[in-house]
Image (cartoon, rainbow, N blue to C red; front, side, top):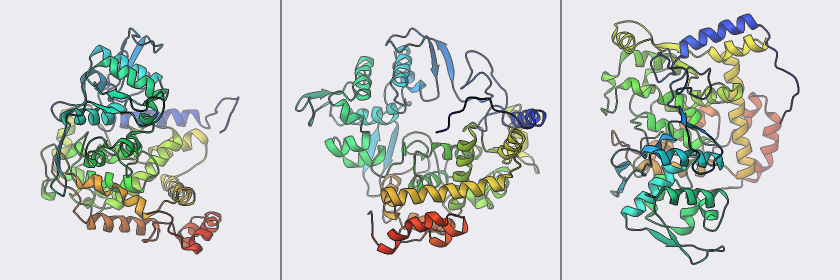
Length: 471
């Protein structure tokens, strides 16, 4: 932690302002949107200066639950408290073993839902809990499970009622979970641990929503519970969730925002039907047009690239919805369509924008290649910390497999019964990173080449012991 008492000086104010204007023009509206900007109340995004349409909306509130706010700020996910988590069923899919699951959406509560969204944020809990717990409770209700007996604690043996159609029930659920009161102590451990203790509903339900193989909200951008992510986008998410050390949403945005260029949800796509502009963009960004072909032919390279870019975003504090500027925005949808259908042209943005901003602001000239090299060192360092502290290895990476043996909601694709294709993909990623295939540990040579010889030395006793620390 660093605490400072002075201001932050800009090395070259004129150059910095000019660079900001250039980047703003490229990224206006956000990479997933056309560049027309709605500015000012009630559409203000995260701040008054933001140029991104991300679904954030402000309105006057009544503070029904004593959250201490008079202005409601609703994001894309906060709106689920008002309108529910989707129309119809949230997920209808089949597992590779033939098992079928139908998960209904969680209900919405109108104006009361806005109050619930405010309250859960005030309590320090993310609004994403509705997307996981709400769907779980809805699935239990469909299975005829509307209550259960509490195990352990001061409420041991008491009956816990599940009433997800009641806003007041959710209010009480939030309160006891945030304060770990009674059975709220079990809820607060997270869905995966709660299920391991109570085993309410079939285990397949836990695999689909969140289990020990999850890295945060594994269902967010992988085509099962929430958004459609046909191949190759869910394969990317599967590998990313397997090898990451935290919730990977900052890494998933960039590749996901290219999904819309396909013209989904009409799926699947034959490679011959993929728009030329998207193929050209993939070639320029990732080194191969196969990056956007169905399947996993180039996914390890896409994953590594976006991991680096997510680290750069986090290090600089720039907007996750805008950066990296993989493609440019257009003033109108007609201009965008014309460019997409032109015989020649480009929709490429400027993936060097972060380096330009950094250099103009700090006076330290650093290229985007140099930034990515530092990000690569951070990936290795994070992996080594996980190996040393938590016994991270290949077995833990492969714990995500059962989730991806459920079919994607638009094209029906999934991992096979033996997940041979995923094992092969994981090994290709290990090779790219310089990790050994047996355990998924960075090799001594890899760490030495990156100037992390002290880290390599710290791991040597583990390496020499030959201990299999997990799996």
